[in-house]
Amino acid sequence: MEKIKENFLQHEALIPGLPDDLALKCLVRISHGYHGLLECVSKKWRDAIRSEEYARLKALEGLCGNWIFISTANGSRWEAYDTEADRWEPLPIMPAIGCNSVNKIIGFSCVTVCHKFLVIGGQTVSPVHQEVLSDVAVFDSFKKEWYMAAGMTRARLGFACVAISAKVYVAGGHNFTCPSGFSDAEVYDPCIDRWDYLPAMPFPLVGCFGLSRGKHFYVVGRKEPRATQYTHILFSIQEQEWQVLENTDPYINFGLSSIMEEMVYFFDEETIDALGQKEFDILCSCPALFLPDHERPLRPSGACLVGSKRRLYLIGGLTIKFDTQSRSYSVVQLNSTRFCEVTRLSQEWQNARPMLSQAGRVLGCAVMTE
Image (cartoon, rainbow, N blue to C red; front, side):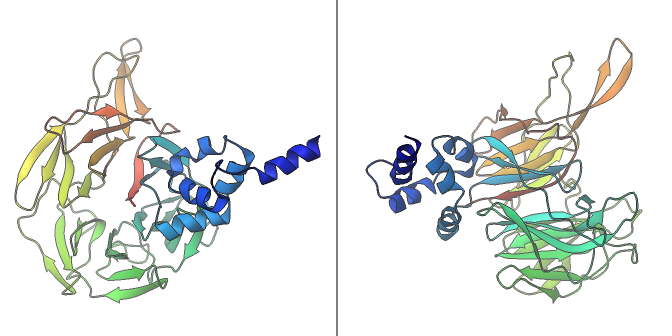
């Protein structure tokens, strides 16, 4: 009887009435976030979705999905949010990197390019030995696995990083041997897995972050490690030249800015603001947070503001609440995911599915879209 059942399952169609090759082409169009449900349909569906052919067809059609990648606590534990399916899933643990083969890092940059998610550079976190990295770990969104790519020409942390025209640009930062910072920049081409030098910036910058608008790479950083004022520099991809910007926008904060369809969105304490090419506008209020055992609304800090498909997402972070009984303050790690539609006349924040873990402060985030 078991033999008959096994033979029946082997010859059972993926989708009744369709050849299996056509049925598989239908299944590849379903978002990654639904794979867990699809695998429960049958063993044949599970095997098909986990097959190399399924991943190959996904890649052939460019169906990488719409993802938000988030790292908290340390740079090795990543979660991915499927904006279409409204589902979070953990990524596999990153490969061990550095001389001591650790997988906990800080001060890294992350970006998506050519349907791949890259974690670049940073500093290892180890009680024995700290090391600044040039390593590049790549997550293949189709095969759902990590691999190591060619490393940067220089180990660095706290540097600016963006993706423009299917290439990755990095600039600035520092390491232990040069704490005052670098002026050099480089570009990575994922098609040939190679880093090349770019013209150097006019001066070194540390504690950097990057933004991209059109064919321009904006680097925001400090001229000295202890400086409080940020300097803005623009690199033109077409002209291959740097330009120091005057009268720049001091309200663009590290980790709390996002660009979507040529608009810059950023936190301004209690509001979320939007900046076009010339016009500035207050988009909406920062959403208040209500905890079950706390009466007053709270505001998150250390959260991630990121845009995808005309939605702004506010993810994770920390908040401080006051306990009236013990008369003491405590830090609460948040796993909330909230979003608003930026194209609507009235922006109202809505709750999405929370992260799998109590996220806390977000160390890195990146967006991938089809």
